Structure formats: structure tokens, C-alpha cells
Amino acid sequence: MNTKGKTEAKRAANTKSDCIISTGQIFADGAMVELVSASPGLRKPSLLLWNGKKATVGPRVEHDGCIYQAPDLAPSLYHAMRLPSRSSGYRSARSLFTAIADLFQHHLDLPERESSLLACFAISTWLADHLPTAPNLVISGPQPELGIDLLRLLSCVCHHSLMLAEVTPGSLRSLPMQLGPTLLINQQEMKPNLQRLVRASSHRGLHLPGNGGRLVDLYGPKAIFCEDDAVVDALSGGVIQISVTPSQLQSSALSEQVQNEIANSFQPRLLMYRLRNSGKGHRSQVDVSTFTFATRQLARTLALCFPEDSGLAWDAVQLLQPQDDEVRRQRSLDVNCAIVQILWAITHKGKQREMQVDELAKDVNVLLRSLGETRVHSPEQIGWKLKSLNIPRHSSSSGRQILLDRDTNRSIHRLARAYALPSTQRAEAGCPDCNQEEATLSK
Image 1: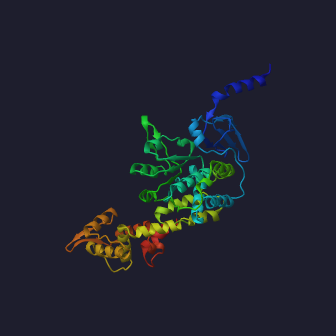
Image 2: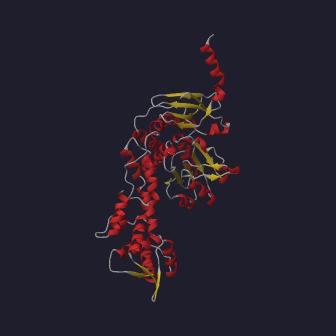
Image 3: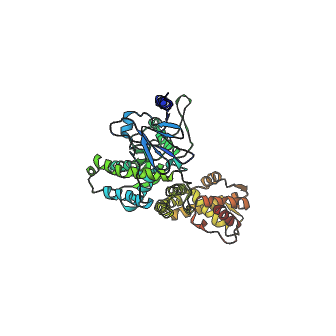
């Protein structure tokens, strides 16, 4: 009896029924399964198995006694989603980053900083499932053709890229996010409910209710081109912002053939970047404490995308500085920020033990007027702002006032740090609350 032959025959007969359908996963020993495109004749994707040293590609792959098989995809989805066909080596993270940035300069005539930010976004999509928040990109500009070409070029270098147009909340919920796509969206109008959905889906673990008691997970990177500046402003918090001006280059130069050539060159290298860096502990030593709260998490996320090169991580974070400066400029016109700034300065004079809300309103209006704000805030409005900031007010014979006691001073210091006021970048000598906040941040 040929026992070996019977065993192999039985195994072959049971292979299909025993297969585990997988869209990709990481095993405890560091091995990985990744979804890749199959040969042109096949209508479904294949799988790539990475054991830490070499990659094996096939319709089915085996690891630790289990057989894994790629899922069947709708033909339209398989055709629209760009998948790498293999993995190949890259010289360094820096060289890969530079080559991607050069693509946007060469093909779309974009400035160096914008091209570098696009390279940051592209590389971050390959590690998005290991990041604390999904990187998002908002693109604005008056030339729709250039915006669409930018999305096309991004599709060549992003992880599992999927180009879409005019999505709705319902259509977004129906997407196969288990495939880990990078959504590249051309959207001329974004209603508030879609804006909220996009913002929520950048946070890991926030499930949305679906039909029939299902939960929907829309976490993943997204790039959105929109001509409406109001929409861009609504989505701008914590996302990479790119503004593209009209180009002299012909959009026809980025033909489908050129796109395929670019993708065939970059996708294998980017897949290898993912294979080598997904299993690493994602911690960064880049200091992002000088950024405003709105930009800080984005800066931290970008720094985590370059575990091989701390210098490159620092360079990537610095690309966000002009964006953060604009956040500070806009924040300086915020009445809440003005209130905190004035109260913070008063606490360090050490002489004043209370402040009338009427006087605070006058000082706030003077400060905002000096910054170009024309709107005038009444004492009643300032009182409501104080309530929202959890700064208590008390009644006195002369009207409502703020008692600058120790608890209130601590609250003011915490708010000053949260608003990243320039004056709080260094501790005031002899101020216990400044020293306490500085010690808390250094931990």
C-alpha cells in the first residue's frame, strides 16, 4: 500500500474545503500573508507569503500547517483596485521616499514641499493598519484635471488604491474595507454627514452601526480632492493639506500606460517596505510637543512611518510646520484662545486676585482687534465662553468676576498648554503651575 500517495491524494482532495480565506494577516512568528494580483489570465487575486527572508506567491499559500486562499472579488472591484504583483528590494527608506517625491515634481510640476508631503502620505498608507490613526490627505485647487491626475499618480504608489468619485455615506459604508484599501476620492460636494463619517473613520476601533445588527469598520487612509474651500477647511484638522495650482504640463502625459509603468516599478518596492516594517515596534523619538494639538497627532503618525531612518522621520515631521503655523494664526483669532492668553498673563503678574468679566471682555476685544478681528464680544458672550472653558465665575457687588485662586490658575495653565500659546513654551520663573505642566509634558 502506498501510504504516502494516499495521504497526498487526501490532502489534495481536502485542500479547497480546508482553505482559510484571507485578505492578509501577520502571524506570531513574524510571517505575513499579503494580497497580490495574479497573472493576467486569472480573474482573482493571489496571496504572497513572507517568512521574514523570502516571499512565495500563489493561488494558495501554506503556513504552520494551514492553507490560505485569497477571496473571490467582484470583477469590477478586482479591476479597479491596484494590487502589487510581487515584492522586490529597495535600497533605503530615504531613496524610496525621494523617488516617490520626484514623481510628483516630474509628472505634475508640483513644488518640493508638496511633493514630499505626498510621498509621506503614500508611504504611510502601506503601514496604516499599524498606526494609531489613519493618515488622511485633503487636496484643493481650481483645476479639476490636475486634481484627478494627482489622484491617479497617488494610485500608483498607495497601498491597495481605489479611485472613487462622488461618494455618499451609504456607498462609503458598503465598501470592502477588510481589503485595506486607500480611498482616493474626487468629491465636489461633501455634506456634513459625510464629513463626520470621514473624520470618524480615521480613528481605529470606532465601529459604525450597519444593517441587521452588523458593525461597520471604515478605518483606513483616504485622499480627497475637492474644489470647495469650505469643505477643505471643515476637514483640515489633523490631515495633510495640499493646495495645487494650475500646471503648464499636459494631463494626457499621464496616460494609463505611464501609470502602469510607474505602478509596476514602485508597488513591489513599497510592498517590501511594508513586509520589513510592519512587524517592528512603532515608536518614534521625534519630539512633536512644539506642534499645536491639532497637528501633533498627525506629526506623530508620520514619524512612525519611517522606523528605519530617524532622520527621515524628523524631516517628514518638519514638512508640517507651515501647516501648523497657519493653525496658530487662525487660533490666535479664536475668542477662547484670547481669553486664556489674557488670563495666563495676569496669573504671572502675581498681584491680581480677581478679574471682572466686564474688564476681561474689554481686554479680549482689544487683543482680537489688534489681530484684525472686527467682531466685538459682549461681557455676556465672554461669560458663556468662560463656562465652556470650565473657568468658574462668581457674583460680587460690582458684577460677575473670576477668582484667580490656585485651582483656577491650574485650569488656566492646562488650557494654555492645550492651546499651545507661544508664551507657554517656557516656564515662568517661580511659577509652580508652569513647572508642574512642564514636568507633566516631559514624562
